[in-house]
Length: 391
Ligand SMILES: [Zn+2]
Image 1 (cartoon, rainbow, N blue to C red):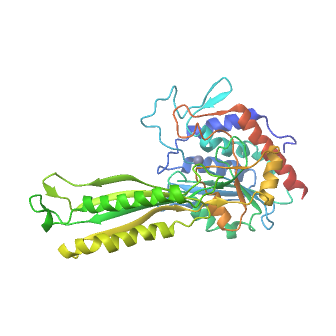
Image 2: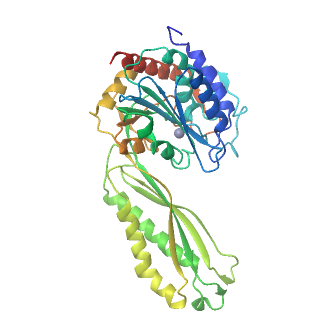
Image 3: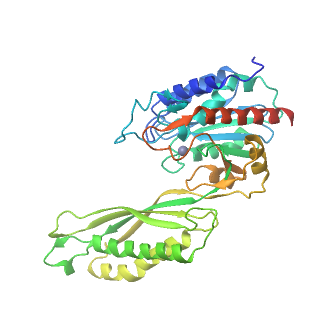
């Protein structure tokens, strides 16, 4: 049993091990999860896994200390974004250090945050905690917080409702109290194929999709001009954009199919349902009658691909005071990227985002984390453990 926490080098060593698991989103993460589980269970720390349908990916929920009392969750994702098409100076899955910067895929987003408590696990397990510290490692976060939901569905079986959650996305160790929510939708437009000399006998799926895309664009413009606004965010309004569109076979055939995908990133206090209903109503009212006059088969099919809520933790909430105290007083801010913090919050677990590294390095070639950031994260965890051991 160790009386003092390990040096920061132990966290950096653990980071090297975690980065070496190429846990790209959509691929398996089980080796990383088993590595963490073996370490934790070897120390007597109870672990729970929840798997995806294929059994090749898992979440891990581990608890130090008494689980019947409200504790604090450190939550982070194990998946990383792909490296294809990126110009890296060295192997993205082998951490190299240059002048205090540790380069590798996931060093900032967000394996450093996972490496710190894993490297400190033996020390934490040796403390007499009055309240628990939980580690929540999830899969497939980068495609819309997909994995963590299966773990959250079981949270009530694992422990008393936690008093706080810190999601360790890279914020430079600043406390962030809010982020936007997201909806991603896919719209399939079904038309009727025909010879291009007779477009009136077919239903042109591309053109109907285009009319709908233009309408969505008008909604986006209105949101930008008229709000609602929240100056804590950049940009301070809900945004909407069409990101992909595919359709058509040849220019002399009336296209029967067109698929486009749109994304809404909404202010936490602004429910996007009304915007989406407005677009759907426009399609039904203005476009569908003309399409159905040619064929009953023609029309629109909507599918929601991704949904996660925004985060809007009040700046005077206890979790904000607690984490601000742990990292040294700094005015809390808000971030433009999403996380699972809104999902924890929705379960009644007050949450903030705070982790080592910069989002400016995330998802980029030569992603890195600075040693100083890892040291600050370790300090935060040390102070948190000390608090959990006293009350
Ligand atoms: Zn991330």
